[in-house]
Structures are given as C-alpha cells and as structure tokens.
Image (cartoon, rainbow, N blue to C red):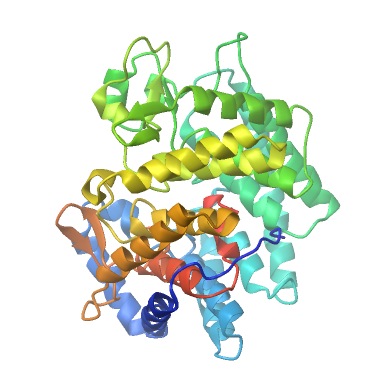
Length: 445
C-alpha cells in the first residue's frame, strides 16, 4: 500500500485547465496502438542509444508495464472512461513478455518488480488481479531475498545495480512496500531493508562503505576523476535512493535494527557534502573517495533533475526529516530547492520535457514541496515550471511531446521514464487532486 498524503492543485485555475487539456490529448493517443507502434519503430532509428531506449513490453520504464501504470492513474481520475480496460491490455502484454523471458531480473525499472508494481496500482485498491499478483509475488519474493543476501558478499565498493532505484534493492524495496502485507512480504521487505542498512555502514568507522569502486564506474571520466572510487549523489543511482526507501518504510511503520542510525548517517553525510554555488546550496554528481580540496568542475556542475542534482536529493532529505522528526534535513532541502529556482533556466541543464532528467521531473518534485509547505516560492515555481512544460507541447508531433536526448536530438519516445507518458502523469498531478501514488516508482512518496 501507499501511505496517504494530502494533494491539491497548486497552480492557477487557468493553467490547471490548460494542463488537463494537454494531458487528455496525450492520454487519447495511448488508445491508438498503431500510433504507439509507429513510435516504437521511430525510437530505434532516432535514439543515440537504441539498445537502451527501445521498447521492452515487460518494463515499467520503457514498456507496456509503464503504460499500464499510467492507465491506473487515469482510471483513478476518471473511473468511468474505460482506462482500466486499456490498462488491462497493456498489463497483459507486459506479463506475457515477463513470463516468457527465462532470466528476467528482480529490478524495478526493467524487471519483475516493475510488473508487480504496475499490477498493484492497476488493481483498484486490491480488488482486482489478486491471482496474478499472488503468482508474481511467488516469483519475486525469493529473487528479492537472494538479491538482499548477495549484498553481504561484498564489504565495500558496490556496483550501483546492487542497491539503486533502477535495478537494485532500493527499487525492489519500493515495490515490496507497495504490496499488501503478508508474512512472506514482510519477511522479504525486512531482508531488503536489513541489507541496505549493511550497505549504508561505515567500515572502518568514519569511512562510508557505500562508494562505487572504479571498476564499476558508470562513466569513463568518473574513473579518471575518482581513481579510488566515487560516492554517487544522485537519487536514481546514488545513496539518496536507499535513504528515501528507508524513510518511506519508517513513515509506513516498517523499521529494522539500525535503520534509523543509517538514515541519520547518510543524511548527515549529504548535508556535509553539499556545495555552495552561485545561486545557493546544491549537490554534485559524485564525491571522490578520499576527496581533498575543491571538487572537479565536471563533478560539481550538475543538472537540476530527478535523477541527479538537488531536486532528487532534496526530496530524499525531506522524507528523512519527516521520518526522523529532524527539521534540519527538511530545512536543508527547502533551502536547496529555492536555490534551484534562482538558477537561470539554461543553467539548470534540463532541456527535455520528460521526467528523468527534464522539466517534468523537476515540476513534480516542486509540486510535492508546494503541497507540503504552501510557501510562495514553491507555488510560484510550480506555476512557472508548468508554463515551461506546456510551452514544450508539440500537438503536431506523434505523441504530443518528444524527448530531447541530447541538445537538438529529438525522439518520439512514449515511455514513462523518458517519454510522453511521464509528462502526462506530471500534468495530471499538476491539474487534478488525485494523489500521484505512481511516483513511488521514483521513491518520491
């Protein structure tokens, strides 16, 4: 289950009406399978990384499982319009593909946890798909426990795929936390949380063990700038992901031995490693192990997005402050977010409209802060970012929005993570009072 939280429209009524109109146009295109299949074909030819961006039905990030999740939110907004039936069609394609694959991993964005998560959200509060959920759970639970057990085989220098939101334990834990409570679910969730507490330890004392060893570096320049390893600071692939999961679990009443100490340890580390930039506090891409002196510019200068940069880190700190009743973490998050809005748009380094590293992700996190605080700075930013997102709408394009993968490279991507479906979800969040429970996929609630 997803814990309840207050949600109201925080933008002007005229802007909300425009956002709903665009959202409904995007939604109408989901009903046209031939249009979607044309987009699938285009992505392969347009993308600079077709092996990553190609359509994979079983995935929630770039597949039919993600579109089923979108239909779940549309069904919650307008339950009489048949979105549940369309969601069933998408979910069927996702499940068929997932069950046919001999080696589907447990991860959230492209693995079995994502299919489970989409099924849970489409179930109308657990009133549907119970047999399917039980079948998927019986497959997921042992995989999740095995992934958790594997964490103990390594003492330091972990690969991101072992712990992050996308493929690792933080994402698997997000799916488990959403499922109805059963003895096996609780046992599996606790195993995941306990392994993350182990991951978030200091070994030896004073030396955080959660760094990425050079051989696991995601980018070649990281190895050059961080020869002894790197502490990844992004919500998507870094330590804020496990932190956010532990916080959400505690807010839902689930703790394990050492979890509160681990949260304090990581949150204090993040507060200590923020950097003072021209417009205020921010976070770098990563911090080198044994850092001495100023950070290299290529690490210090970071986009303002969900995946990397202040917005994702700030949301993780806010949730941690709420879970631990520690105002310092929340005030740090608020100060850093207000600094984001002071940055000129071009300096935020988010050119795309989409969720992962685009305007939609920043807007959605801003909506959370606007709902939680009702402070003028966040309300103004929510309006400004909604206007920016609507200005990127291209009604004559195939899907209404295109992903700008790199400057000037546009892709007709339908997906939740990097495509029009993710923009649709955020426009619904901005313009309706239906809680965006889907965003646990991104460890935001």
